[in-house]
Image 1 (cartoon, rainbow, N blue to C red):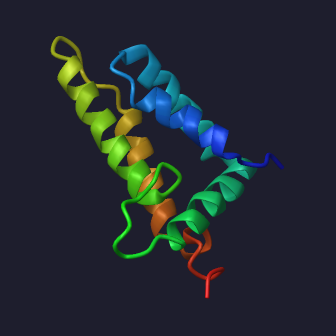
Image 2: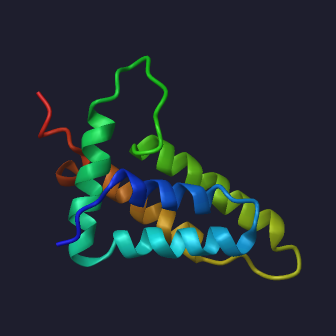
Image 3: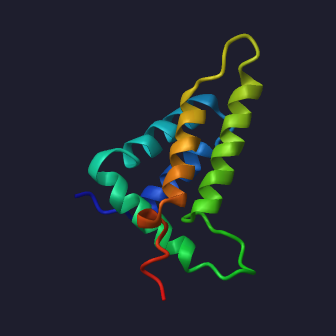
Length: 115
């Protein structure tokens, strides 16, 4: 199984944060490859454990569910804004839904791992 590294997450974040449509599309596709099949468990566990370590007063960093959800919302908003003459790509909404589902899933949240 593929092991997730901070660099993997940073690459996704960099692409999704881009002002360029093409880069955001690459970021969403890359994130989706991590959310599919065997890779999904390791990715979700990595993000979940980092999220579970957050203190209540701490601002979520890039390797947490709250940050990824916020970033996907911004990416989806940018996609809607940039698609004046065409329909926005549905992949942004689908990916956001998957990420929220994974973040809420007890097996992926990291909550059961942290005492």
